[in-house]
Length: 395
Picture 1 (cartoon, rainbow, N blue to C red):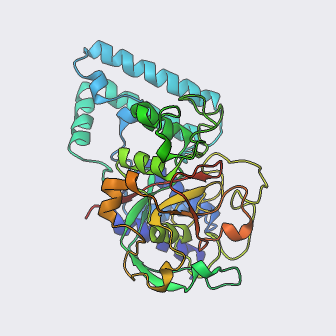
Picture 2: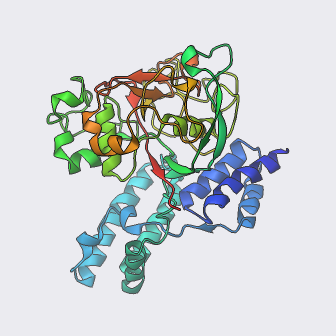
Picture 3: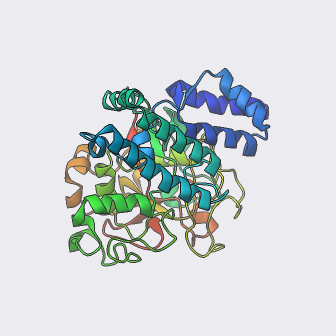
């Protein structure tokens, strides 16, 4: 198939799930067209347009300006205008200071300023603002297609490894069917995790109960503050318990091991890495080339639009770790250990080791292969461990 045909197949995966994509997803798709499929920007735009996507609907402009319905309700029109202007001015000024640096959400600064201006225009107009609030309250927009997540289509893939680097716990390689789901495009960052800590004091660095970490929880933080200039780096020194708590708080969950591997492969079977069969330090943060984590999204995404699935930090999965699980794993939606219901309702009572995937910034090349299986105690924390979340696709 030609590069153009491959790009069309890539877009078809999105279209099969929803006719709506966010502006962020549009940017990611076009970036893939240029980087992965070697198309011109104009050609990628034309192909995307031919698919008839509805683009940009469902942006939460209150969230864009860091506002809430609660904050503006019962305010006079003058007060609302002042609040909107104040938040817009702060964010717009920060964007100007950032120059042309790309944002972690995939937008350029110019694109971000356009969104900020749209938010200001809509929220200062009483009629447009009410229509927007009604849309949010009625579950409109992208509720079934989260703007910060990538859609993973249902289907089969080959799970495990059969190459010379494959370990015993990656064998036998076997066919697995996984239902469709959404997965975070990026690893959870310090900025995002701070919102959770601020809303849940029991999970602050100095408050978390001893049974739920190994003593180094959020080791690099000072109280409730993450390290300076690390806001968009993945949060580290988080235990499996903490990752589970965050995921439940935000209305998501951790991925199963099978979901993680399907998403990480990006549709490529029998490949060692998300990009192919050959190691490449320009494709991921591993091997101590950088000597530390990088902000999320620094490297090119895989074919499903996921960043940093190999390297940067290991990622917690939902499953219990069983080195022999592949010997008798179910074909459909395999999951090792306790039932999903038990995990959801009683995760703080779990004691068994949990799966870790993806390798980290200090990992050797064989650990960042998509089939490699690691594990850790649920209390474990380190400077190499973080996570990302998934969400079940609504029917």
